[in-house]
Image (cartoon, rainbow, N blue to C red; front, top):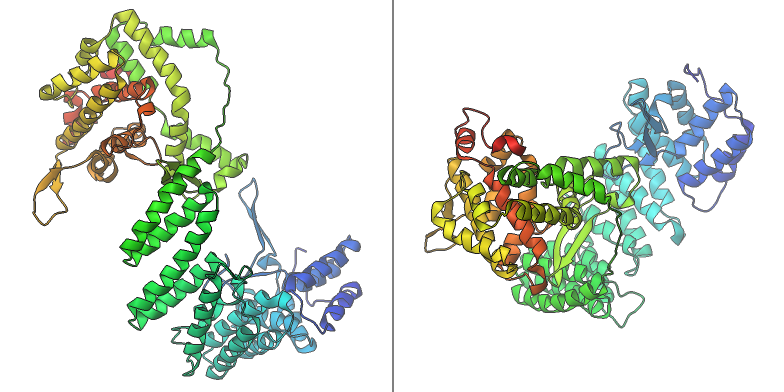
Length: 626
């Protein structure tokens, strides 16, 4: 309807549904009633304007979603839409829609609150009045409506049906929120006592949703005073949950996840009362439950559990226990690597198109060919981001909505979040995964250049010498690394050239007027040079240099290839002895050479201008920098 109705009239076919639910002796969920109303309305379509108003007033009353305590809906209210959709024209559609709730709807809910007998229905009408009256009419909600909602929620929570345990927990949580908001100490006490009554009735260590809520809502809540016995009751119950959930012989209740939830809360309590031994006891109990489960589970599953237990142990200062977990973690990590399936995808290649592209890259001389290779094979972070955004927006890849865990070296190397939560991580992961395919063409381009222009060690050195990052004192080391590369001695080439790349980027840091050293984490007070990770990941001046000179792709690429665990992380894997013999390949060497060529494009004059900020310095991309 386009205009607000003067009053709400509920059609008889809907009133019949409402009366049936109101007469129920047993509990039901609000959505059960909303669904029944919807079915009755669909059977009578099309609805008249009056019937539509009656349908929305009653059907939507029970279809609104409720927020968790302390949270608000998109409208700043407790009740909010179940569905939010963006249309192509940019407008937003809500269901239910607060804009279609009118003053007549509020008056109707007021009347219905006084008519119905079932506490679930009475609580919903009263709570809607308290929550939405001001948004619809401009008048504040009435305290009596809040009290009616509280009393009705408490009454509804007395249902004996185990099917509605979680519903009744949420009802009492809302009742407590309302009682506190109106500052009614009597109501607060009644809801608190109803919570303990419900808790004692439904608590089951094997059912994770049946017990954490009492601690979460009442423990250390200065707005809800507890009797002398009630805090001890909460703690004793959590201790019982922990005991049941960490005993493998009790199959029905054994649950490391429930043990974790209990231990977390107990640790908070024992830390508060200064009982550190009990803190460690409960944390150890939860950890041992996961360790027991991990020993029996597949490695690819169990290493995630063990990683978390290790981190929690360390957080609580339990370093000896954490070290023991690492031993099992590495064992299971090795098992996990053997359980990972290989996936092969054949990609067709147009040979004529490839040959044409190679001819264009090498159409002039050696220097221009090397410069073109450096820029042409630079992965584009912006292109990868665009691809990922299209996958996300188009819904064509469900994996965009999930995180990714990277395994290697018999452990978890990195966690990458979903596309919405970790765009930088997903871009680096995407570029890392493209490198295998991209290398095939890089190798062809390098081989064509080497053969056509007889490029070897001297040719690469001639290209790199004009760079602002070239250090003449290091030329002998570069020469040895390049000699090894051209002899296909990739073990030596990678070992020698990667440190030279680090030195070149440290030289960039100096050009930018930043110190290249830092104080060691040592009481001796000595200094050390900044690492490549420091330079690429933690130096604002370096990030600003790449950004101001429109070289963000360089920065992402260097991080991905050299220092980021979500990518290849070559520098750190080499420095820490993690690279295995099969990783010292022509493929890795070619990418190392590519970085050397790329850094060779940063010519002295441009880098100095970029450092002092007087011009848009650095290096232009492509042939213009040569």
